[in-house]
Image (cartoon, rainbow over all chains, first blue to last red; front, side):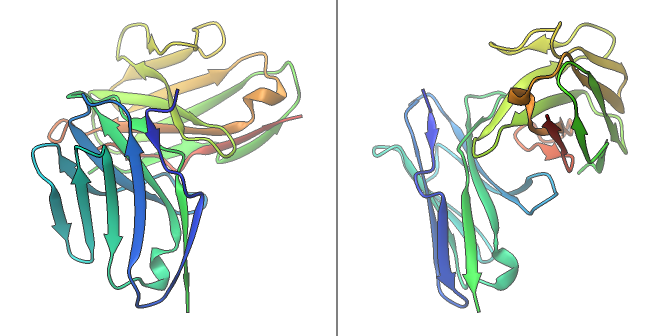
Length: 111
Length: 115
C-alpha cells in the first residue's frame, strides 16, 4: 500500500516555463512533507519542506503548496532551468525521522 | 549539513555471495540509516544503524540477510548476504544532523547488480 504517490513518472518542461510536480498521500497523520532532488549517481538532496500547519512555503524559485483536505502537495519551479533536470522525490513523515517516499518524477527541462 | 561517502560506488556480484557496503560521514551524527531503492521504486528504509548496539530493522528486513555494524558515530557498514538477483538495487546511507530532525542527508549510493 503506497502511502505517498507520485503518479507521473516523468515530466518534460520548456526552459523558462513553470514546472509543477505533484504528490498525493493517504495517511492523514503525516505532519511534515519534504521534496528531494536526485541527480544520477548521487544521493537525494533536500530541496524544500512544509509543515502541515502551513499551506505554502517558498524558497527562491521553489514553492511547495499543501492542500490537506485533498491530501495533495505540489512543487512549483519558476522559471525552470536546465540544471533542474533531475528526479524529484516527495516524502512525508509523522513527527519522527521515518520518511515515507514516493517513487519519484523525472523532470526534463528542454532548451 | 554532512558530507557522506560510500564504498563501493557500484559492484556486480554473483548469486550466493555477500557484499559489504561502507558509509563514512565527515562529522559525528547520532542517527544513521540504510535505504534500498529497487529499480523504478521509491526509497525503502532497511534499518536504523545504532552506535554500540544492534540495528533496528524495518518490517520485511532481517539481520541475517542485512547485518549492519556501527562501531562509532561516523561510520557504518551494511552487508547484503547470500545475494540473489532480487537484491539488485541502489543502497543508500543517510544521516540526520542532530540540529535538524526532519532533514536527512544522503550518501551517493551503491549500485549493486547481482547476476
